[in-house]
Image (cartoon, rainbow, N blue to C red; front, side, top):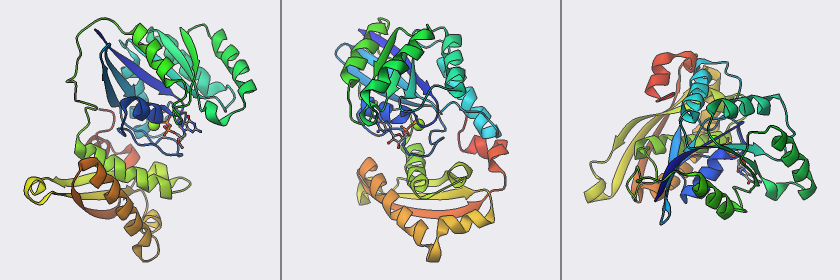
Length: 296
Ligand SMILES: Nc1nc2c(ncn2[C@@H]2O[C@H](COP(=O)(O)OP(=O)(O)O)[C@@H](O)[C@H]2O)c(=O)[nH]1
Ligand SMILES: [Mg+2]
């Protein structure tokens, strides 16, 4: 039996979380068109007859300005040390640049075997692939360069075959029925944040967070109901109004959408109470970051 860990790293928005979900076969990591959607390390486990692979999704590598972003980058550094395989993911529609070079250096420093994944091939002209493959080939640190589409699933079977080749022999680390190590409470906060990100613009996606205050399962077995209370944190009072929207309509619509997703994930009814709260400069506030579980 094969058993090992593969860490997905790359610039924000390259499609890392989409790949994790595709491989895990369900949504364990939220996805949006906004950079820095993923703030935590999130695992997705796949089990097959040939063995188990633990995939690790990580925050996108970007220049850290706030304390929060330093913690996010630290998470990536910790994850790539001692891992069996590094999957460096790039958006093949974006030309090679300094940011990508920084990720390349991280790949090299990890010392682990690495694949380069050229993602989003569903949305680029095929003749653009070859120059990209050449450019990354020159880096000299990739065992494989594989064009994929995490969204359409193209080439993911081939990718998985190659990944298994690089996994060491061993006993599975996690139970066969476990898909992620994250709690339902954590995922609830993330599902709410995904809906929030879809609606927010400019700096607001970065300036907001979701803190789950209550995840009450006491009526789950008899009433098939979970009660969730969550705070949406923003940095300034003016942002509070944007999240609420006229007549608190934005917040209400967001709550309705999030509740539907949560009911599907949890397989029961959900009562969802959402509040918007201003927490000045929370991205530099260590205690808020601790409470959000960032960098852990
Ligand atoms: N066209 C296309 N879009 C993709 C693909 N993979 C991801 N995306 C989109 O790219 C954006 C960022 O994806 P996400 O998985 O959140 O990227 P991450 O920041 O690297 O985790 C989202 O809008 C995804 O729907 C792909 O293979 N093709
Ligand atoms: Mg992500």
